[in-house]
Image (tube, rainbow, N blue to C red; front, side, top):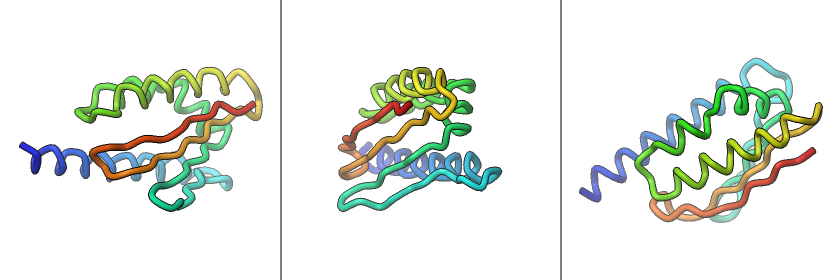
Length: 110
């Protein structure tokens, strides 16, 4: 069962990376992904934040079979909803730890 869980989680991470690539592909200010010791930081542009809010990506993430998915998805929807009320609003989040024990922070910026 652990092997299946790790395979599914790996596929989800690959899918999330491709979504980030698609989000940033159409703009000069692409999604910024910065490696950090033990993790990474993702900085969404204002237009990407608007897209995340309108498409409710957080709800889709909440349904994924991962221990952190529900809280991350809810936080992403809340942060993108708040930030999208401002013209330059954006969301920044960090993710740390091994795939099966992720932790991090999320900020809604104005």
